[in-house]
Image (cartoon, rainbow, N blue to C red; front, side, top):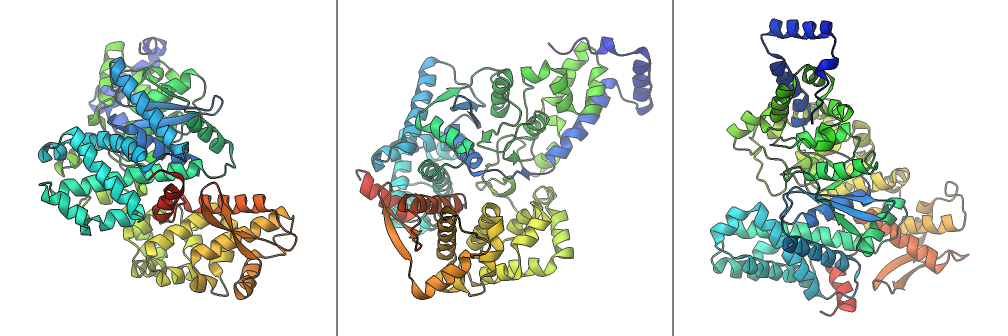
Length: 585
């Protein structure tokens, strides 16, 4: 039931005032509500928002993308108390047979993340099923045009996965260079279009990389409660699929409803397979729930029961002006008001996007892409909507206040969108990351975009060490490489910490500068858990094999695992090497 008693509790004077205002504007109370809410939701719809989140939270997003399958959108949270995954989706498939298949596939996937003895064939079998379901949902028209059955599509995806995992390339280079391979031409010769195959390669690379990152994460050290809760839930395969709520309730709202009923809602992070629509964006903000961000579009939506029946939650969602108008409506008009706010017509940007051929459906933006733009959409630079997403103002500010930095970054080959995305996360952060020495590193790098991502990752994870490493007075990075310098630096710092040294008076940079000349004190240790060689710094007093080795491993894994195109312990040739020694290839 809607709050039917709300209108009765209004005083006579407020009712007369509302009616007078309505008459003055030539609008009914319902019209005033629509006008007010349209303005309210427009503030969320006109921009794409990306929130800064932790490594564990990014892994929840990756897990949500994997578990989306063909459910339009998936949302995943961790019950920290029970150490259990809570999974919700937009669609709820009826029938116990389909539910059992979904549960079985989730079980199989979670098992792969911790089973170091899983063979390549087992991995490809599970991933191919997941990617097939996801691709058929997102690109059904292409699959229909290609006249390919689901089993044949799954077999084709398996071929792509074999090419990726057995070829030894990293995911991104594999994706970008696949069109030049014999297998690509062979598949085209079977009668498939380049558009179909390119989309399939993109989606395969996206979900395979999510799997690699999750598997790497599961075998890295845990230094937070969030890490431990997520890893325990995955390793023990503890999960609950949330099915309550109407069929068309969005995944974030279905999961929020469950959390609210158990008093675990506020402050919870919900991993999403796609960024929130504007309706869900308003809702999670009012509920004090955290997500990766909002993609800035609107669609038909369902107001969840737990919000509809709570005046406090409804007021938070509608905003004070809209709620006051809603409060003045009688029950029948309130139903009409809800019908309006649940529709995509509540957004002031719908007509504009339809005119430019942009669908205003929710769940169209990948939650792991820069400021919410789906990497599989073709977004033209001449699309007015694309440049109304808060970027124009940012570009103007960059040209006015940071023209020199902007010009140098562009000359290094950094795309304008990437520069704008970095700037919009904070001008002070932009200034801290982009400094003369950092520009020099970008100029010297073979791939400036990759180097910028490394610099951002270093700043976000180790802000206190950023200046020391990037200033690099001895040009160690130019001589020995950014990755090697960082790895040695943090290995020295870990050893010093274990020996209770004063890190301020005993600078790790000075130590590694001297060691590059002598190469004394460095050795490689064999880690039997993943057969990967890791640098470990051995001081005169011996920091202890296990502690230093594990700490160096943790620093390395944490530092690199989330940079989209950076070395990952389970990505590329290391991934293949691991399977060579531990899997039955």
